[in-house]
Image 1 (cartoon, rainbow, N blue to C red):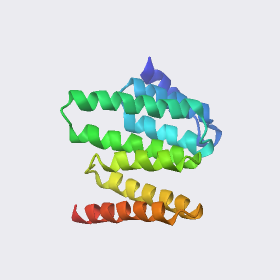
Image 2: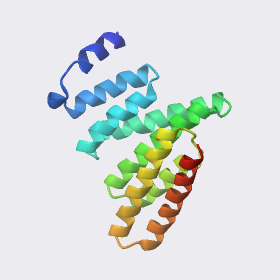
Image 3: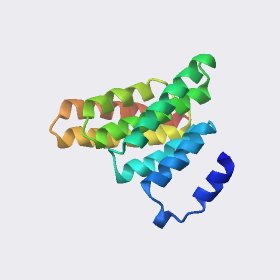
Image 4: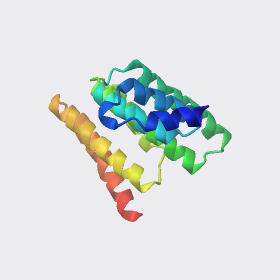
Length: 161
């Protein structure tokens, strides 16, 4: 029973929680269709190990499920927001593993979904800042500038809400 397992897992104190515990909690959330909660758990794992295969695979799995849901829902804004959220996480995972080109492509695909959730817009804005900094650190000012342009556009969207 997923609810009982989740109850047991979530009572474990954070200071003793391992990345695999967060992977397990994320899996339960995925099975329950609670994708944003799953993404948040996977981000905890990836913060400690950007190369964690299970966490990275699960993000791709969530993206795939949400793409199917998006097609079935005729473009529901809520599903768009969730899909943008998982793509942001995938983008940051690529960036933290040094694959800045894939990170940029994935971040752009998240932004292109035109999410309308204020918190998500803020997270995307922050993702743009981080990715732009990584390109700048590599000496690629052109790519950094492109992403800063996206960030400015997101900031305007945040203000108009």
